[in-house]
Every structure is written in C-alpha cells, then in structure tokens.
Image (cartoon, rainbow, N blue to C red; front, side, top):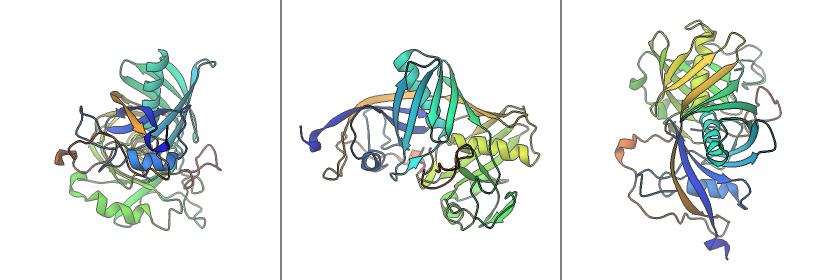
Length: 330
C-alpha cells in the first residue's frame, strides 16, 4: 500500500468541548506533526456525519502499560501547529476515558512530559490529579532577569498573574468576561517579552462565592478554545494566591464547553474533575511529506454557532519548563 492510501483507525473524544483525535501509539505515523496539522484543521480536518464540526484541538498518541497496577497510560499530545504539549488537563482526562474503554480500568496513571498524574473514573466523570501550581519565575517561565513572582501586574491590556499548571498561564481576573475580545487582546500577551516560551492567556470572572467563568486563548492552538483544564486549574490557583477563595474549597469553573470542578488542597496540590464524551471512530490518512491533505469524508463547514472557538490544549515542549521537570517545556 502506498503512503498516499495508508489509513489508521482514530477515535474522537472531547472533555467539556476540548476535542482530541486519539491514535494508538503502536500505529506507524511517520510524520506526527504533519498528521496533526492536517487532521486538526478546523477548515479541512477530521469530520463525521454525526457532527458539523471539523478538526480537533490536538492528536493524542496513547500507549497502555497493563503490567502495572494501576495501569499506566503514556500520553503524547501533538497540537494543531505541530508542536508537542507537555501537559493538558482535559487531554489527560480524555486519555483516561479511552484507556478505560480499552481495559475496563477505573483507576490509572497518566504519564506526560510534565509528570505522572493519577486519574479515577466514575461513569463519564473523570478526576485527575494535576500536581502543584508554581508561581516561581524560572518555572513559569518568566524572563531571566525576573526574580519575583508576577502577581496582579499589567501586561498588555490586562492585569495578570502568571502560574504554571503543567503549562504556563497568564490569568486575568475581569469584571465582564463577555465584553473582552480575547482573540484581539491575547496575542500581545501570549508573545510578550515577559514570557520567553510564550504563555496561555486565561480570563476569569467571579460569578459566585466559588463560581468562575473562564475563557482561554491557547498557545499551540493560537485561538480561543471551548475548554482548557490547565487554565481552570490556573484560575483556582491564582484565586487562592490572591485571597479570593480558601484552599480545600471546591470551585466550579465554567469555560464555554461546560463545567469543571477544581480543588486546591492546603498542601497546594490540585484536582480537576469533569465529564468526557466519546464522539466517533473513523479512518484517517497517514500523512507523509507527499500527502499533505486530509482525505476525511467531505461535509459542510462548521456552523456559526461554533462561535469561532477551538476546543484545548495547550502548548509546546520546546517552549516552557514544567515545574516538576526543568528540562521539559511546553
């Protein structure tokens, strides 16, 4: 079979609107960057008769190690721009859902470049331990001449706090989240000199004692997404840091794609909980340098009700250090 006609089985999942193509890591995909760029495209990427939305927020290449107890799932996330993400909260939850479908397990460890995360399942709800958010300049990372945390400071048109929750986020607390054109204000912050590896830009609006609305512009997706798990955790971490909420208080964060629950414990460890849904299974072209186009079935373009939002995931290994592994970046 020629490279042009080679196909691979893929499954599409989403976690609160953050959608991913899943491919078994044992399958031969010689050019993963090209594969992700083609099939994640919101204009021409993967599609199915059950949905009017093309593309995805990334491709998850997953491998299951059943010899371990609990089982381990090795997760590699390639983003729509071809970069590799160190961590993605919703992606990790989706990986757990897929692994549960394959094995029947309700508990597992998700191995990511940012560290290994414990996941548990209850029906379609998945909780993942997200580690400890870090505000240290070197770990966000901030520019090398910065030796203090960036807390509630003006960068571009937002007053932001910078935190790494597996990937870097610049979190801005705002009064009216709908009044802001995120795709206009985010790029100057995302590329600001303060953030040598780039940054995700996340807006948060406090709507109740323990309720926040969320919007995130994701690095690597280069667009606003329907949901961002690391962004939801960043909101909770920042809210605790600046005194809006107390630790050990479960909060609800609502990105456009649905509700997520986040808790920051007294030891600063965090958990992320939300639903995951399996969308469909399909066959996708194995992309090589000589096959640059998607051969997914044709379908109508996504309707305007999509609001122009992509759905997570977030950021490049070449870009920013993980708090747990200084030599791994996203």
